[in-house]
Length: 494
Image (cartoon, rainbow, N blue to C red):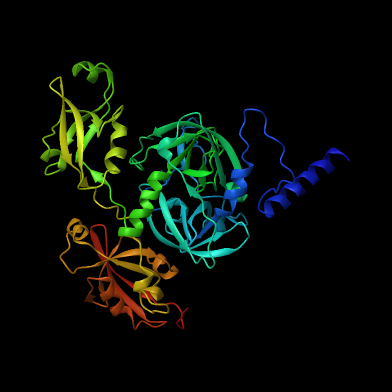
């Protein structure tokens, strides 16, 4: 057989394997002495890994925490050496550039047999429809229950008749550099691709303003577009991370990958289920790194710590007596090696709880107790919506292609609204609402020129909307308000 024939055969075999959803080994050769055998982990956990497909009515509008968002998927022509973080929107189906603008692919994994699935927020952000494909080739419609752009986590839900296989959750806090880890996902659309490597570092803060509250797991596991949202396993077959980013100047894997610790991800899940949103702690300080000159001026032995440059008026930090010039050396007993170490520790502290800061002031160390406040809520997060509140076949918000959620008193205060004013858009599920520019976190103040102050009032105001009817909404987006008309799909003009 000539070389051309061999090459053609190889391509045909690879394509058939990819379409079949992965390679099924006929017999497993024993692992080399001293090296781990991953076959048991893969066989046990692959059925709980899913392929995620998100579709959009128009060109994808990346919202929320950014794509570092706006960064190109190819190197900057003006600066070919520039390295950048890239989100994986997956490998869009390739028939045409137009279709590429309307579909993105990623990975996810089932965390409970009743159909809850974890993935990245950036995989499904702003999607009109989301579907997941299981290893047995079933395709199920998925609902975005809630998401948090800051942590880049989204919680999906599918109808799980008869139950689904689920992963085991590990402890990312126990990870150490040098440990073996394994990823399963769909890079470039190749389902159930298995890659392995080691933990390169833990507690890695990327220092970007896009995601300052996450201390990532850094690995050398080969990760590419489409792996986003997939699981990172330890040698016990437990999920320890959610694959999220790479560091690259080409758009492809270059040996440095980052995963969100599973402890952070499961905290997001718990809060979405219990409260419908994710809260973060806040001190109310601005800090900066300690340079050599600053360390010399403060008479510090090294450059560890975060120097306070500003204290917000009325903040927990001000109430605790902190002021500019204090150097924060530790938070609840955890050393602050750099200023970027502080936000994740504070952000993951429950609001209302007390924390102990070790600070350096006037050359002397002292402990300060502070009651942690709550970070203003991320208005780009998708609030959890309640199916129980919206009966099947309900013509109101479901027909308009959106879900709504009550505003609590704190959120109303942040937005400058009075009691009984407005409801928040939790999720945009239909093309009409998406084309109108409605986004999760927008506040609906009026329906057909009548004020609405609760989800129940909104449903009452929209319950009689029929196909072809136009519903007039007064919507507040940021600090601006405007009227938007939504025509219920199914009328003569559709």
